[in-house]
Amino acid sequence: MPISPNQGSTGGGTTVTVTGTNLANASSVHFGSKTATITANTPTSVTVTSPSGTGTVPVTVTTPGGTSNPLSFFYIGAPFKSSLSPLTGVTAGGDTVTINGTGLTTASAVHFGAATATPTVVNDGQLTVTVPAGTGPGPVGVSVTTAGGTNNGLTFTYVDAPTIGALSPNSGPATGGTVVTVTGTNLSTTQSVTFDGAAAAFAVISDTILSVTTPPGTAGPVDVVVTTTGGSATAAGGFTYVAGPGI
Image (cartoon, rainbow, N blue to C red; front, side, top):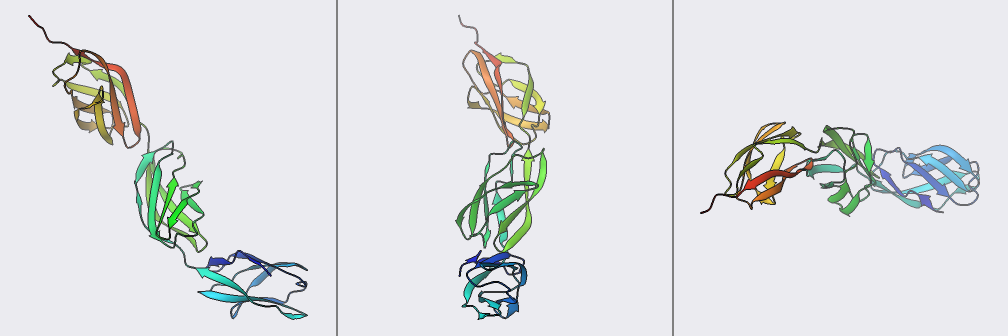
């Protein structure tokens, strides 16, 4: 006589189906000493809503013909989440987030606001999940659903990708040292600025303005790349290094 699922929340409320023979007209289903609510019954199955409980309990079905042999049902506590990393990512989704906590073995879903993703369970204390796309920038609540229930309490912040509008000035000596104003959008979380792959010193003035000092480079146009927690933006050939005079 199988039982499915054979585990559920300590708070009860799990829909459980017991299958077997001669189960028609079941009068009661017990989870240990507690009685479950019968929601459907046929000659070969009984569907119930589990009562609250703890640990492992025997499940029996009682019909006019007697009481069945017991099956084991395992109560699982709600998960506890202690941290997630990283805390931010692109609005388009696709970042991999690690969630640490306890009771994560049976995790079946991770919710980022209204969006849901399927996690990969590493062990009882950790899982990873690919962040689904968000509806826009900003924070959303993160919850994990397991056989023991759902637990909230963590926050993930979606960040829009940056854009680059203009560089001023857009040329300077190959020796570097030119202070360039970069305008664009979503620049407040800038992590790096590169000129032809070389890192440049920068300061965030606002969400739309960066002040950048060019590193040394090779004469000619180069790509300028701004990377933020929301992604990267490239100004192709956006800055031109000018060779110094020679005699």
